[in-house]
Image 1 (cartoon, rainbow, N blue to C red):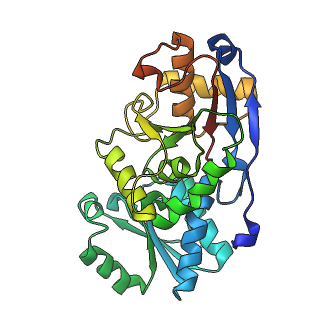
Image 2: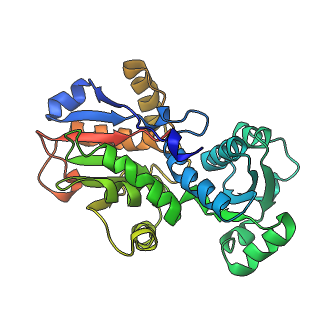
Amino acid sequence: MSPERERSSPVQELDDERARRAGVRLLLKRDDLLHPPVSGTKWRKLQPNLARARREGHDTLLTFGGAYSNHLRAAAAAGREAGLRTVGVVRGDELRGRELNPVLAQAAADGMELEFVSRAAWRTRMDPASLDALQRTYGRAWVVPEGGSNAEGVGGCVALGEELRDCGAQVVCCSVGTGGMLAGLAAGLGPGQRALGFAALAHADLAAETAELQRQAFGGPRGDWALDGSAVFGGYGRRSPELDAFRVDFEQRHGIALDPTYEAKLLCALFARLERGLGPGPEAGGIAPGMTVAVVVAG
């Protein structure tokens, strides 16, 4: 994956009567179509990390994720394409020796070596002593945090915001797991645009971590952004009958299968808000009738 392969993902208008009734024009930024093997926004985060690894003479990328981590799957595919060895540290040592789930099986098929660690070890995974131990086992590696959210990953997402500057949207929504996409997206948007991140998990430090990622990437705050906690649906990876019914209905209406962990939660919460009616208060997230709202489908 080299810079010359960089390209924009399409923006599609979503024709939905629920948005029309609310007086809102909805756009989808189809990052899921950007680089199908790696899947969109993950490609934006991984490409600069792979470039940094090569510049610094690394032949191995070491990264982290849970048992159903799309980031691990994407990192394995990206590393294979770039000719780099990949190591994935997986939360949950009880998984060692079991049959791999489809996500981890695909990562392994793309050459990723999987290291299962206990939840206690997971909590200290980024401590210097833990990283030293991993590199003694697997050799010198370029380390990428969970979700690809580091200064390089944030920088890779700036173009996402830049691509949306002229789409007419006043608010750009994205789902947030680790804060990297939101941090970069906000930095790339133009004047008068706001990034609204819908948290996919209950995490008290998510706003502070997003701000810290901007500090690491840019030296300080960039852009107008906010976090919304209405799309957690019980926690990371949790499902509900309401969410599952929304996914089925959305696919039937629009022919797009949404990731249940991220975009399905975001859009379910957003449509519920549109159907309740948009008032002037903060619960509307800055969305008002007459606005154009873009939603990033990260893939």
